[in-house]
Image 1 (cartoon, helix red, strand yellow):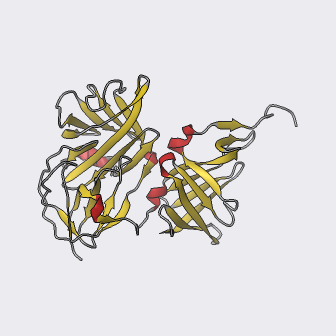
Image 2 (tube, helix red, strand yellow; image 1 turned 45 degrees about the vertical axis):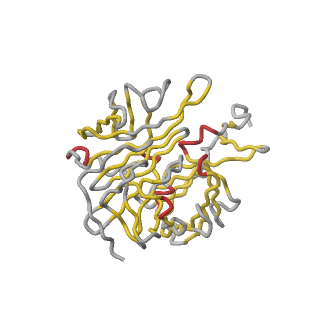
Image 3 (cartoon, helix red, strand yellow; image 1 turned 90 degrees about the vertical axis):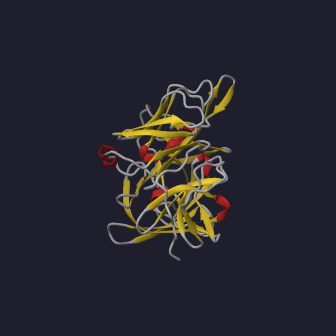
Length: 333
């Protein structure tokens, strides 16, 4: 079914834990390329959803606050996009100066007066750009689903999607009632907040971007997991490169690079089936399944490369696991 949409030029912006950025972009900012995606690390995440009507940036984090833990609740509006810096202003309490810097390797959020994060926030937070993950693909299940400008807005915008439309969705860790989403139409891409209950994400389409980045193998020790560092070899790892379609496997003393020539969702939520093609032309099917999304844990199995079924942790979350160095490395053998 073709979407019926009417778009307004500007949406009112007051969003819990969400940064809303206007559509005007300088030539230099455009040169930096699309930054749509989820940037996640231990203790925080940054979600950016770019549309032609709006660009949404959703930030949430926890941080040490004396003997307890503080959290960030940050509604912003954009004041200006200049080069690789987006200038932001707090929507509810317009005090202090905020910005989002688009550096070549990372995204940096800065604020001199962190009213929305509370006392003790360090004043900046950064996210590595290579740790980006793509959106979920969901279908609209209601006759009509309206885009909203904020979590508390009682009146929707004039943009909407209809039953059967496919939208790209990011569900933040706080799991709000309305989620950042965008719809790619024939002429325009529209971003906004959609009611989560009006979406069906159970039969999601997947992209290799969802698995992008570097993953380190974990070794079981007793009841726990450690990252093992052998004496004369590298720590085993997987690197997924969506741009080239490559999957590189570090095996310790050798390395294998294959092409991902097929990707489909598995039977369970958070599971995937990857078809790998080697340079020789032979193929192998790999089963990839989320074990604990909050901790960045997956299990990977296949007949050859991962014959035992191995657990991996995403690079930006590996600090949660101890490193065990092989003993006797300096001894003569």
